[in-house]
Length: 485
Image (cartoon, rainbow, N blue to C red; front, side, top):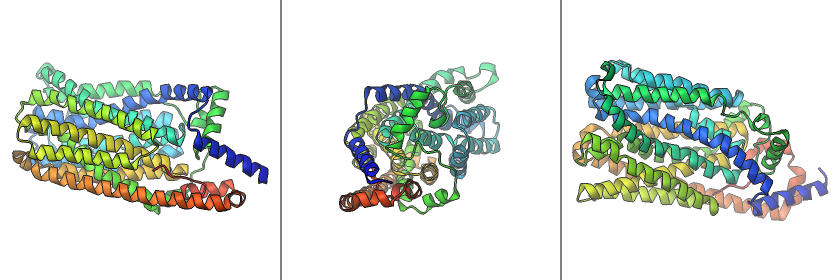
């Protein structure tokens, strides 16, 4: 590589780093991509979260009584979902990398929609356990698959906001689910079926219907995107090439899989989600029960899940906008953890049900916002397509082990004391997550400074000696790479 080419490359990279705003043509291109990806993928995730958490609404309408599922067995059924989710996460993203998201993601949606319908047809405890396992297995590939798909369409600084909008679907699912559960619950007895059965059946049918549309809307890889013109696709790949590895047609190699498993930062992102997943899923699955435990009737509890989940969605979008504006992740993740901790403290110490309900709002806002930020972080910081796909799957896999712990610890035996012990444990998990975020912040800040110093001292030599193939194999460990912190 000649010196003049090196200088041009360095100048191009510097200009992009200093000027995150795009040209008018780039903004039009990004808007076109947004309109194609964001609505359909957010809808798929909303349905995914709805189909996994509506069991909490169904419980209030008599699921456990009708299926003769005891309180401990109900929690076991919730945990079985996450066991399957953990087992199938990494394989699902390896399959995605080797095949086509345009077929893979809608097919996952179709299959879990059918499984969700079947939740309304089970007659006993064994059926409940089996169907929850199948639901976890079929939903496992959606979230990491979508995050990976974002990483091959958007530049690094553009991803967190899109992930936030997408993850906002989880909070909206909680709000939407509460309203739906209240309305569908009034169908009790229609067709000889219970209200809780209709929740699963109707929401599953909705998922199946949307999956059929998704086959025609979900795009394939960026270098094959048919919804873009040849000129737009070339422009997209050119802007991605200057920012990350997203434009490369990387062949699958097991080397990159093992590279992910050996990276301590990848484990850090996973442990960070482990801490937040405990509170995310225990709160989302038990929110109707927690609210009912404050002294409200079941129909009130269904509707009272709407305000905290709506606040959570607004908190996600506001905080992530600020995070993107200041190009910072760790401080906002840590701040979200402490907002959630304040919420749990109010839940524990509030003198009245009204005060405790305020605590629910703080907890929901902090928990959902922290998750939205941390789930986009490895997509911005892990370079190498296969390594990133595996890293995203590892983050969800290890994170959801925390979810398993959450649904097992929030046992009905603690409900008489307003889940005091589980809430205290939730605070511990949030403190652990904040500590992991602080570690990642400190390590990556120090590494960025070291690389800046190395670039200032040996910039041209580095570009001459480090070929494109070397950069591809080094990924984010290349001295030319900078972490988003």
